[in-house]
Length: 99
Image 1 (cartoon, rainbow, N blue to C red):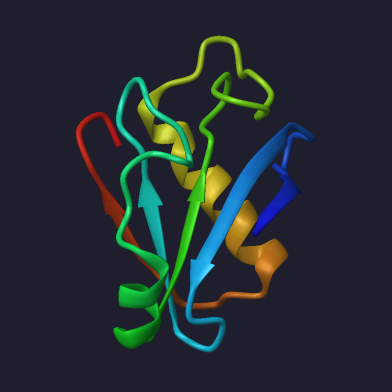
Image 2: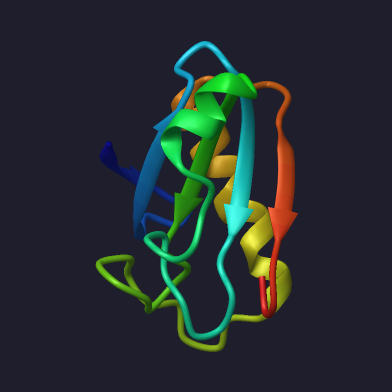
């Protein structure tokens, strides 16, 4: 399921959610280049592992708005904004490659 969430500074972030709706939230940060639609575990595996997987397009990728001058560390604020919008107080984060 695709959602749009807004960052603390008003940028649009494209978010993809899959897996077990009642599962533990896990953010998967895509590599560079990449997108929220990159390689991920199959939804059925996520469901069996009780994982709700959240991926998003980092600034300037896909429909997410760019953030001129962004640094890798900016991802923390975006993940926090998405977690807040989705109502998660606790979650895990996994990254691959440039993620």
